[in-house]
Amino acid sequence: MLVGLPPVVSPPTRLLLLGSFPGAASLRAGQYYAHPRNQFWPLVGALLGEDLVVLGYGQRLERLRQRGVGLWDVYAACEREGSLDSAIRQPRPNDLAALVSGLPELRGIAHNGSESARAMRVTRALGLPVWQLPSTSPANASWSFQRKQAAWAEVFTACQLIP
Image (cartoon, rainbow, N blue to C red; front, side):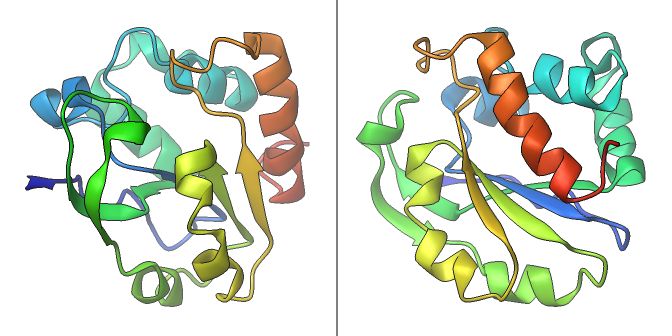
């Protein structure tokens, strides 16, 4: 059984971004979105107006916390060979309700990709706006970076993270 990463949040978190479960590279590194072809860090950096890619991992997380962006996954643990979401077996969910209850400034929850979005029934029950975003995974090659950025920008704007 593989075990995921802890949440990255702080009291001013306005938007909680939920992946499905860390890929093999992320688990090995102990870092969210560690695969070099995953577009998460360049995309979020572009939205926030900072080059997050040049920062160390700890600095990236601190920038997210300062800017009101939280990270976690819908699954706490699972069995999986490789990194594809389609290979996830026996997933155990994270306690999203407990996390959200401790985030007084939270304005919304966004799912990074379709596997994460399978938990939308759970996240919608938390009483906040919920969105499904196009995955930043290299497996989602049908969406250009610009198209992903436009979709993500709508959510960041709705949560008052960018003007």
